[in-house]
Length: 537
Image (spheres, rainbow, N blue to C red):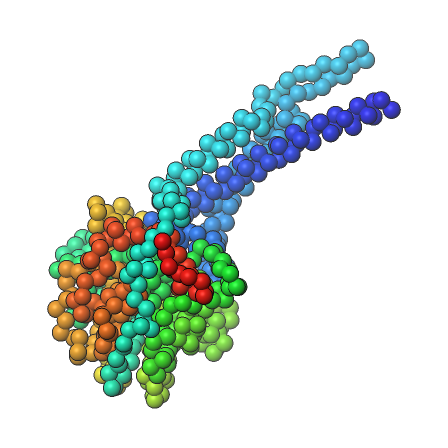
């Protein structure tokens, strides 16, 4: 009986140690996963900020390309599991079965050490903690982690002070309303041009897009063809679309307000306090449409555009429903741009016969990172795949615009072409980042405004401007001939007017610093409106 009690007491004494070992192993596993996840993020998303990372981690995976999921599983999860299993086998198994060998004989029992390694919880806890610090340093260098955390504690009243509520501004539409076709070209930058045109390369990879920008209105930060800077929380697809159609950053971090049922996975309410381009056009008799070759649920895009303007969505799933593609057809993120342009032509011919003016928006996908999608139309002109994809995208876009110009509805239709954000391809643009370089922005989002309303067609405010994609919101309305009281909406400025933008008035450094900070006004007025007092102190 005494022997059994002794064994029981011994087993009880071992349990705290076993629990400690288990927790240390979990800590090591998490550090390994974080390390490989950060490395995967750097390799696949270039110089994105923590805004996108937090947003992506908060949202559902619905609509995500299987290619990117497989990439993460292969490059982050797999090496984590392999290394952890090896670590576990070396230390846990050796400690339990190989560290010492007990030899019992009739006369005595001898213990022999036959393996030099043994798991010490304290030592490996310190190692894991050091690893976590190293991972944090890598993340800070790549994604400005420290600044992001600091900004969550710093509050700014800047947005409250400069925000112009579109509902408080008089908007005067022309008697004959113009149609709008807005083509968002995935990751399109003026940077892809040659240096003589305003880009970063010796070769112009997008000559047709350069021609469109030279021929029509294209706002620039110099005398060359340079586009818009990317403001904070505007550097990924849905955030880029919000910036350009609402004049706002997308600062959604799982904040939960009283009496509001919303999470990042559901998007029950997507910026309910914002008034967007879709809202304004719908209120003025427009019918809104949006077409893309991917699942429009990705990133909450469907909720944003259906809640703000009641857009008719035509995406990958809709193409299957309508019999445009087979149910098992799937390339890249859904279907390629070659098909997108053909489907867009069919839809435009259909809606052009209707009585109301239309706003037809579309988003391409072939030029998304990494390296883009090589379709049947792409030629093997350059050594770099992404360069070939861009050359192909430029040609397809030009042909589509040329087709539109041949149609009867073109006479009363304005075409806007912009990138949704700068590319996240980690290799193509090398050392150049899209936020700031030597105090100034370097990589910029492409833009071209074609067949704008005669009232703004002769603008002399195109060149040597400082502006962000948020300024495209009021500028798009002005291109349709809409007179905007004060020339500002939300955080955007009508570029046709020559009125100083927030970037010009405050400078990029100050503007970006303030937009990165927490804004109580943004949370309570735009993100989750409530009856609570929204004054900031």
